[in-house]
Length: 389
Image (cartoon, rainbow, N blue to C red; front, side):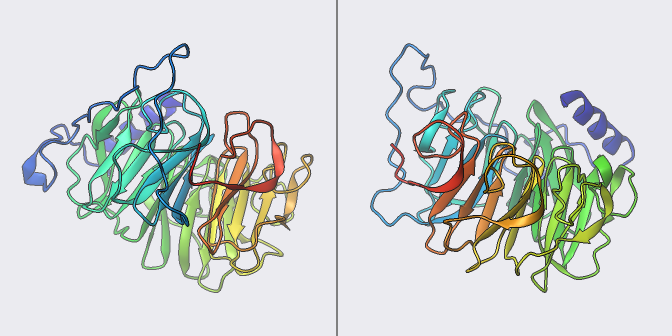
C-alpha cells in the first residue's frame, strides 16, 4: 500500500494539483517555525514486554465523562472528552495510542499531557490531534507525538488515512506522509470537513462533497471508475451535511437525513440490497434519518439519534451488530445502544457515542478494540469506560 500511495502522491505533485513544501519551517507560509518538532517521550516510552508498564494518566478525573468526538483506525479507537482530554484503546503496534508504549491496550488510556483537544483522527496505524490553538500533532512511526512537518498555520479540521495525514488550513487542504514532510496542498475550497480513506480523500464544502485520489471501484463518486489528481464533485442529488471515506467506499449524510454511499460494494457496504460496486451514489434503503455515518473496511454504520445505530455490510466478527456470519445487504438495527450521535468504525469493529456521551463498541476484539478490558469478539455492544483501567 505504501508504494501505491507514494506513486499517487508523486502523480498529484507532477500534475500541479498539489504543491510540494520542502521547507516545513518556512514562517512566510504562516505556519509554526517549529514544524516537525518532536515532543519528548513520556516516561515509559522504552518499556519492553518484560518491564512493568507505565501507569497511565487518569483519563477522567470525575464522572460523568462525556465523549464529544470519536475516530477509529483499523484496529484502534480514540475519543475526545468534554474536558479536552484524549483517550485511546486497541492496537498499539506502532504507538498509535500515543501513550508512550507499543503495547495493545484493551481499556482506554489517556494521551499524556493533552487537555485542549478539539478533535482526533485515527488512521490505519497512527493518530492525529487538533489542539484548541489550531496546532496539529500526530504519532510518528516510533509512536512519538510530532508537530505536523509542514507549515500549516491554524488548522480547523484534520484527517488521517493509510500513511498520510491532512488538515484544513487557510491555504486549502494540506497533507503529509508518515515518513517525512513532503506535503501537498489541495486548493479546492474544502472548509467544513475532511475525511481520509485508504487511498482517497473526501471533503465537504458548501454542502458539496469533493474527492481526490485513487478511485477504487468508484470511491470518488463521480459516476465513473477513474482515479483523479484533481478534486471531483460527487454526483449527489441533494446537499450533504457529513461525509466519511473508507477503504474502497464513501458515504454521506444528506440534508433530508437520507444516506448515500458509493464505491466498493462486494459485502453490501453500500446498503442498497446489493453486493455490486457503484461509482455513482446510491441511497441506503431502509435506514431512519441519520445524523452521522462512518465507512471503513467492508461495512458501514450510521447514527440515527433516538433510533440508535444501524449497520450493514461485512459481519464476519459481528461488526454489523448481529450474530456473526453472512454479510448484511440491508441496514440492521444494533441492539442495546439507546441512542446515537456519532459513529466510528474500524476494519472489523464498530463504536458509537450516545446522547449522554457514553461510548459503545462491538465486533472484533483481538487487540482490545472494544475497550472493555477483555478479549474475544462480541457482536453485542458493551459500554466503554472512559475511566480506563
